[in-house]
Image 1 (cartoon, rainbow, N blue to C red):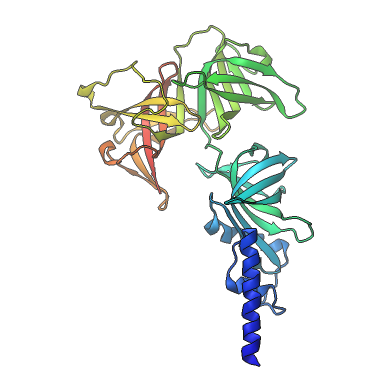
Image 2 (image 1 turned 30 degrees about the vertical axis):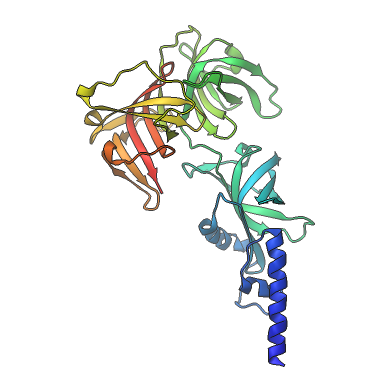
Length: 384
């Protein structure tokens, strides 16, 4: 009799596992058994809503940009971990996403609350749900809404793999200036050309909170700008997939001069030794006497830059960053490896970085906008 019961249980487990595979859901044999068990394996005193901390802690380990869908028991709730989801819509804080497993597509609705935390991929810092765009690649975790008729998750955490870190900074001649109504929270937008990329632009979105100033005046509006003005600095959060910048600060000049430089800080890029798809930069020769190294990089927005690295000038140094809100602060000069697992930067000679095409690098320095040349204060390679 006992053997028959065991065989029956194995058949049930196999049937559940088969259904789960079809749905694209990851679940273990032990978890499959749970669906048919009346008695919980562990005593859980907390309610469904109080399980979010435990769910979030587990989900950090299971985070992935690759397609993934896991449903598991967490106390009295069903925890959900999703990776590799493509955003289809973002309306009033409710996302619809697709997760593709080969030709199989699993559609989910993602509800957010005031407690939902959103993180950018590259610097891991916080963002908001409104900054998630259609087409973004996200992972998230939360609690399954068992009252919904379709797969619906109330998210605790969302990570957007398409969001660049803070500090993106662009400049150039303004074109396609558009003033819109403020009903959607935007005052308008304009385009800036990408350095050394013919007919390629980044779209700068301006909101009611964006600070705008010229070389002669402060507290300006987007309507004070016009096509042909020269943007010295447009700072904000860049969406790497859509080529968009949500600007927090803009400084422009009406004189039309294009000799200005911009300070870029932690500009995310990929090492590109062959300058694939980029215009060859011929505006600067390398001074061998100063032992200046050159690294060609392509930013996540598609901008091609030549980075000048003078290790003799950068070694064991500091440079001062300007920040109106927080005041001046010092940052390290030099060449580094960012050891992601150890969460620390290690000073490294440039020749020992072992750069290969496609490596993720961070660049800080002064950039002559028209030439696409950066005199680097800091150059960092990310090592996973």
